[in-house]
Length: 224
Image (cartoon, rainbow, N blue to C red; front, top):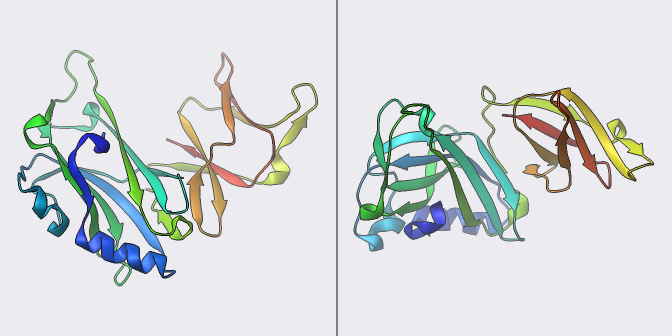
């Protein structure tokens, strides 16, 4: 969704942080904020330090590495998360202040102004779900992390030795048992936790869930 916003840009503070990442420092994405405020002065976007009128804060992020200098940050929200209707107009991506972990910095900002979408809580079981993707330049993707909300995720760790080779299908399998929630698979490295494209998630009629991949790896299943 973020890619459709008018002049979705890195802020000045974001560019300054990117230079530090290139120099070897770490960068931690903390949340995506969406709001209803107007800002027609697109030239002012880089100088923004907050949204005009924040409506919702999304802390359940996933990240995939697109290249050595680009990552994709994804956040999802549903109209069922809302208490009141609002115009989905502006969006911001926040990072942890590397000089003070108790503060945050607006890394990127976008605003579609008059093209905003009006979103309302569930009416007659009708739900709107949005997936917001930030394709974001970071300078050095190996030094980038995300914060996972501990009260929103259940982490199920597994190691390379847990995978079992299936000679019939010629793939490695990891049986997770009955899981009714949707899940994502992450690989865990010294640089952080990254969404993995290597494992296929399959389910049977009783919600018996199995991961399949060509090569076993250490990682973590995230139950959402």
